Length: 73
Image 1 (cartoon, helix red, strand yellow):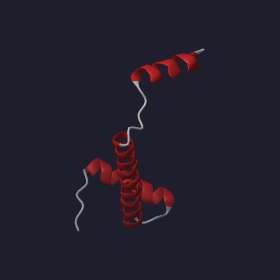
Image 2 (cartoon, rainbow, N blue to C red):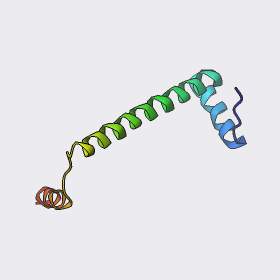
Image 3 (cartoon, helix red, strand yellow):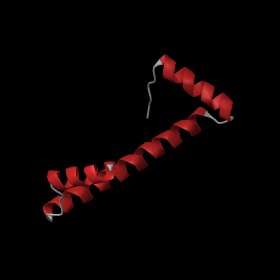
Image 4 (cartoon, rainbow, N blue to C red):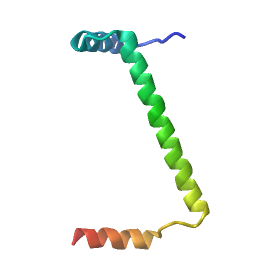
């Protein structure tokens, strides 16, 4: 696999590697791992939310507005 970075991003990555005493490959692998984990988490939250909607587990706009108003007091 190849990764193409802008010169600016590559420079920042190299600076981070020096500051943290880590290799650029290690930093890139960690970043990709975090990206994948975050996307998996977000996709699950979206699926869960869609399933709740399909089950009718929703809150009306009026209820949300009332809750916000109550919190403001």
